[in-house]
Length: 327
Image 1 (cartoon, one colour):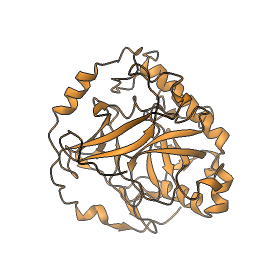
Image 2 (cartoon, rainbow, N blue to C red; image 1 turned 120 degrees about the vertical axis):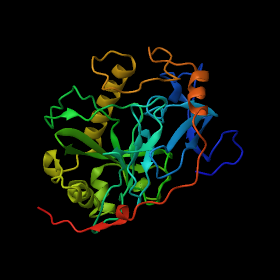
Image 3 (tube, one colour; image 1 turned 30 degrees about the horizontal axis):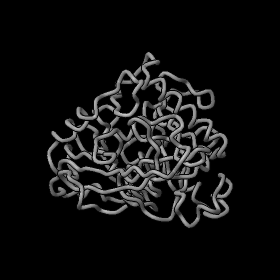
Image 4 (cartoon, rainbow, N blue to C red; image 1 turned 90 degrees about the horizontal axis):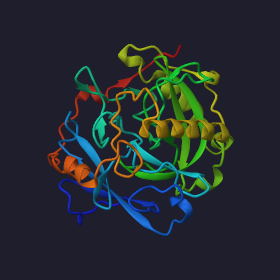
């Protein structure tokens, strides 16, 4: 993803490559029949990094969109490739996430007790050990009790771990192959973690299902479960637990869960669910949705935000290394 200086947007802007066919400014169900046309995605920063006001907005061909609702889930006609929005690049620990409750759903840093949240460095790890993000147009319905985990959804898009060999950039939109899924239970809620690999990664050709991960990256799945178990322990929380005894389920199972959460999102965006979860559902592309907003209104929201400012220093505490005793 290249830094662009030619876009007429205030603040720092990047471009991301993605291939999408659109019809009448809406994501037509048959838009994936061709990869011939290119839609340029770009990012606009607002506020100062490492502050409560920092935001990253998403644009399509220079116009504001929501990364939650307006970036399509699937990236090819066969639905074998998916679009992933990168929130946290590998080796970083600022807990950035799509803001599901704010107009246009920009990426922002999570806040707890009025302070910016950083994930603890827990030995032997440093920051996130994969490129971490979410699948657009998915939603873990907080009113739905999963039959496998026995827990309700966490009210967020489904989480994604890209195990590719290159570190991504915050806000990248990657095309990925699904390999499997972990069922984490986070404070009593189902919090699925989908294991994927960037299709452009050198190892992608050898990765087609969850068994290929252990074959070509031995120890990574074990480390992934360990990371998720202990990352909250330094804050006084107990270890997270997993359904299926921490076993990663295969691609077929993962796609079942992804399709289910995509269906829950469809119900959400079409207002067919009684529990909206307090989410901001405005969309510029879903023309049949009651939450459809005019493009000029979306642009106005983004254009009213302040320009990007120099990054503020990060507290030393955020870089502390913790040694956790496993249970």
